[in-house]
Length: 277
Ligand code: C2E
Ligand code: MG
Ligand code: MG
Ligand code: MG
Image (cartoon, rainbow, N blue to C red; front, side):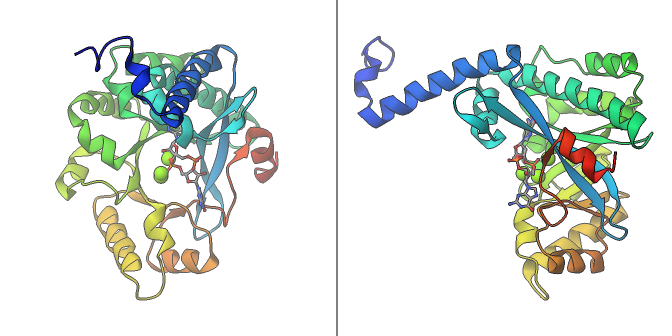
C-alpha cells in the first residue's frame, strides 16, 4: 500500500528513471533561483511586412542563461515552469522586460514600435495573476496598450476559454492586441474566432514547412488567410525559411511573416542592428 505514496517510492525507479527524476528536481530548484539571479533573457525576432520587407513588430522569445548548462531554450523549461506555476512569475518578468524594451525602442527607433510576448494559459488561470497589474504597469511606463501584443496558442486558448475570457476583455479594453499563436494545431471554430475579438492569427510553422505549388498545406494557408481577412484579422506566417515559401505566401495574400529567412531571434543588442539604431 505504501508503494504509491510512501517514502520508499524511489526504489521503483530504474537507475535511468531515477536520474531523470533527480535532474527534474534539480531543474525545478534552479528555475526557482533563476528569476532572483536574473538568468532569463529575451531574444527578439522580427515580424516583417511581406510585401515591403519592413519590420512590423518583434516577438520576444525567452531564453535561460543557466550558470552551468549554458543557454536553455523555452521548450526545455516552460512545461516544468507551467507544472510548478513558476510560469506566473516568469510571465510577469517577460511582460515587464518587454515593456522596458518597448520604451527604449520607441524612443530610439520608432515611436509606435510594438513587441509581442508569449503567454501561457496557466498564468491566466492563476489567482496570482491580475491583468489590472499589467495595465497599471503600462500606465507607469507611459506605454499605450498597443505597445504590447499578447500571443496565446490556439490549443490552450480553447482549453481554458472560461478563465481567459475576462483577461481578453481587460486586454481589449486597454487596447492590448492579441494574437492566436500556432494556428491550425488546435481546434477553434470559426464562430469562436469571431467572438474572441482578436487581432492576428499566426499560421503554425508546420503548415508553412509544407508549402509548395498545389500542395495541401498551401491550400490550407490560403483558406486561413481568406477566412481571417473576412473576420478582419491580420495573418502572420511563422517559420518562413525559403524565398519560395515567402513568394507563395505573398501570392496567397498573407500580411506578415517571421522566420529564419528574415532573421533568427537575436539578443536585444543585435536586434538593434536590424533596426539600424
Ligand atoms: P512560438 O511562440 O511559436 O515561437 C516560434 C518559435 O519558432 C521560436 O522558437 C522561434 O525561434 C522558432 N522559429 C522562428 N522562425 C523559425 C524558422 O524559420 N525555422 C525554425 N526551425 N524555427 C523558427 P523558441 O524561441 O524555441 O520558442 C519555442 C516556443 O516556446 C514558442 O513558440 C512559445 O510557444 C514558447 N515560448 C517562448 N518564449 C516564451 C515566453 O516568454 N513565455 C511562454 N509562456 N512561452 C514562450
Ligand atoms: Mg509566439
Ligand atoms: Mg508559434
Ligand atoms: Mg510554436
